[in-house]
Amino acid sequence: MKRLITVLVAMSLLTTALFASGAGEQAGAAAGKKLRIALVVKNLGNGFFEAARDGALEAAKELGDVEIIYQGPSSPTAEGQIEIIENLIATRVDGIAISANDPDALVPVLKKAMAQGIKVISFDSGVSEGGRILHLAPSDTELIGRSQVKLLGELIGWEGEIAILSATAQATNQNAWIEYMKKELAENPKCKNMKLVAVVYGDDLSDKSYREALGLFKSYPDLKGIIAPTTVGIAAAAKAIQDQGLTGKIQLTGLGLPSEMKAYILSGVCEKMALWNPIDLGYSSTYILYNLIKGKNTGAVGDVFSCGRMGEIKVGPGGVAVMGEPFVFTKENIEKFAAMF
Image 1 (cartoon, one colour):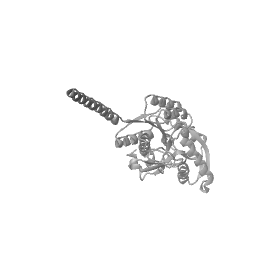
Image 2 (tube, one colour):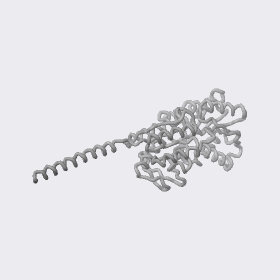
Image 3 (tube, helix red, strand yellow):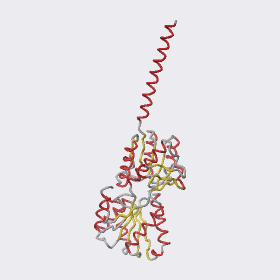
Image 4 (cartoon, one colour):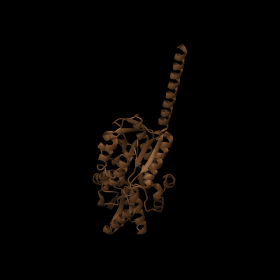
């Protein structure tokens, strides 16, 4: 009897060890699983968002247990993004960072994602509050809008007809910037002789933006300057100015990628422009989502995220976190930054 008890105890210990081993293997497998973070952009083939993707990949490499899924529609539509998000929900990603083509149309599908435990933030171009935990703004909206007018004012001597070449009519960030451009024109005494004659939309498509720029030249023969607060639009407008032999006659500024605008800045087609670093934007978005997924942050107003080399980013009113100020590029510094993004 004593021998039987000894055998049973031994078998029990062996079974416990086997279960413990199995549990350890399962825990190890779980620990080895990477968090899947989706970066959903306005459209593919856009250099700005490709740079943001590179920043996300940089952050993923630092964090070690993150997989980046980079997706976007072929054209910048809300419908295309909704379809992508539905697929991401079906494949059970852990987090989504989206630059929205429409602030409101995406809310229902993003609510659906959050209801299933997926952490959602917007970056660059925001989603309405009900459709995300927080929005990461590349810079302060008012500062961006007003600074664009000041840059162009300096280029045209603070007088003459000007136009704005925007992205889509529904783009959250574009519309907010344009409102502050209009306020700057109305409120800054230096702008009293500047007249906004048109706001046109190139839908962030090179060919359409190019045609819209040509249309401005034809419709407004006295046009002195164009603000294009879109990386696609400013490059298209620069090409149109160059092709039509209007360098020096029509001034151009806006938000552009150094790598795409280098030649135009060096040739004087666009003497100065601004932008934040899209690499940093993708990098910060990844860190923010990672901390949300891990439960280190909630995204509530006042919450402070630790974002690697970007330091701390704080959530402000309306669930908006601001990354930094825009940077001005000129022929003196463009070559350095063109090699980066």
